[in-house]
Image 1 (spheres, rainbow, N blue to C red):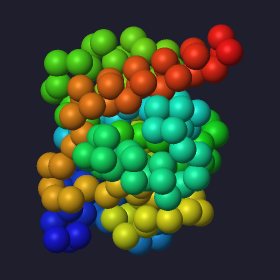
Image 2: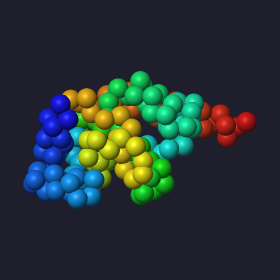
Image 3: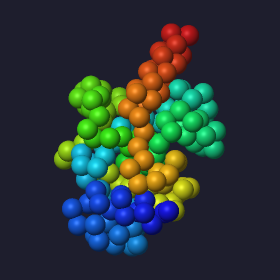
Length: 159
């Protein structure tokens, strides 16, 4: 099953063997977004506020239940960040692209996508790996998580 998922992910790259080479040598491949999928960048604080946990294991379990799709964790770029993979053709893309704290990343953006068996730190890893080729988060679920996180952060700021 992992082989089929890996082949699907590699097809996001214009030269799929290059993605395989990057996974082999670095454990992470830079894949262009806006083709097979897009990614919503979710700051760690927003996710933790939404799910009500700070420890990695309960956060991962809550994300899996809430989003029911693949999520990557990256601690190297802009602090701790989660990336929920969604369908690029989803109708909410334009709305999410304008979002300042949880933007949808698409055309012209590359995402570091870990090898399918990287499921723990250090580095970039799958919090929730894809279950099959084509497995993506529902945009409505991502919007719901973002809204819950914003509400909680606003309540904390007003307390």
